[in-house]
Image (cartoon, rainbow over all chains, first blue to last red; front, side, top):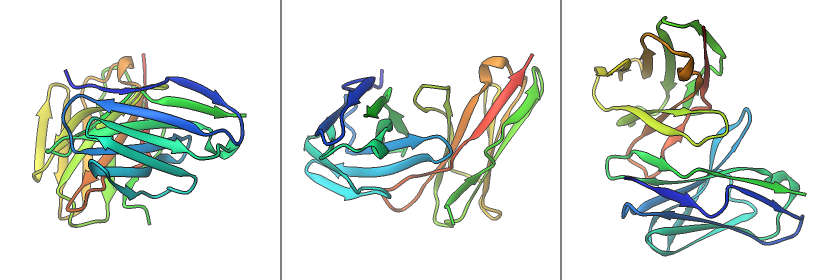
Amino acid sequence: DVKVTQSSRYLVKRTGEKVFLECVQDMDHENMFWYRQDPGLGLRLIYFSYDVKMKEKGDIPEGYSVSREKKERFSLILESASTNQTSMYLCASRSLSNEQFFGPGTRLTVL
Amino acid sequence: QKEVEQNSGPLSVPEGAIASLNCTYSDRGSQSFFWYRQYSGKSPELIMFIYSNGDKEDGRFTAQLNKASQYVSLLIRDSQPSDSATYLCSRSGGSYIPTFGRGTSLIVHP
């Protein structure tokens, strides 16, 4: 069964903290994505990776960075968390037929 | 202009009716189209995909694609309260980046 997991379902951090969100997929997909989802704004792409060590900026990369050292793992890093980064973060991997499989999401609150 | 447009709704239909969800897109290079269902507080899950013009049926769901008019629709027959969710339309094309609409909220009332 296809599976994408994320390290935390809920996370509370303080302004200025460095935050790591991890995503792991077991489907051997090359493409992985990080989105944030906010009410009324839909899914917005932060970063994506099309292969190990390869990354591309999405629509809203400011304040974020990513790491893809292994094919199955794609990490999102908030260098210095701010309150406007409070959101639902969704990781996804994509099959060769372009179907995306989403993880359960991490609801991050920055105080 | 957003590449994928959906009416945010909510679309309210009675139980047993047909729910019709629509999506338009701007990139004529789009090749494949996907419908995801997202329950409140959950992540999106794929329910249908379509690549070719015409209709594709899967149980109570039918996806329709018209590339000339650049729209995709999802029909849900015999709607059930459990179908109440937000439905996201997505397109994928030559680039690596898929594009999502903002979603349509569907409410099926008993």
